[in-house]
Length: 130
Image (cartoon, rainbow, N blue to C red; front, side, top):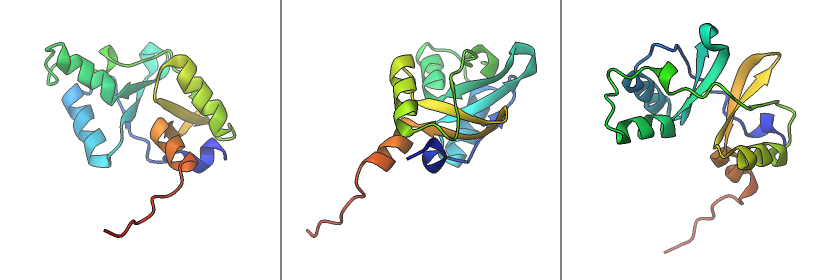
């Protein structure tokens, strides 16, 4: 199975000056765990994850003041839609992260997460009568 078959095509793109609270609210509304941060001044495309927000709040930082650009990972590993899920899982395991931005012709077209891969690899839940 390929990344294009597993990825979420709901891609939230935010700017570097969004507050962490704004980012969290947008991510929660879409039920997603990561946002693409488009920041031309910092090299283009980065990623902000729920873990980045959690780490900031855990440090006592104010999510109404903290900006996405200060918590964004800019050294991003990107996936291609034609990658196998094994390649994506290997990249995630090697890098220690749970999300990959999927690029097609330099444009974000999706995000694939560990959860997406598990859904594809694990059998569908069976209804077990009580």
